[in-house]
Length: 157
View (cartoon, rainbow, N blue to C red):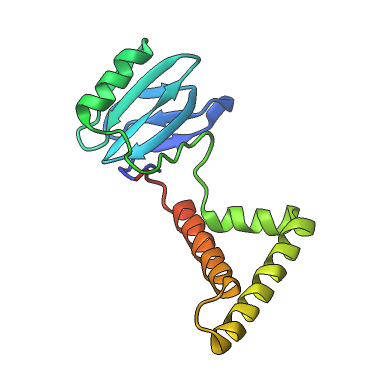
């Protein structure tokens, strides 16, 4: 499901976007993003679309420059971060479990290192309020939290 209630599925090996309340659908999605109640993306080889999820209005384009002009005119170009989807937009927890399972030899040493860094950072704060170790520990946790939040939020910003 998209944030606006439309359906993305995979019958027959092609990714399809079904527009709720109509018989219209887009076959062969390549990549897309969600922004301000719109789904914006590319389908087939070089076709483009904009779907307003509130009105179910679907605009398709064969020329990329026309698509880009429409994105700018509708003001649906993300300002900070565009989260492009290429297959399914899974939960960040699923990605995290995949990371832990298949990246065992990389992820576990990183997690242990982060915990050691955090312990040293907390211990060093007691001695001296601001130092390189405590800043590294705090900075690393901020990056991890931002990465996780952006991973579970399907919208672009």
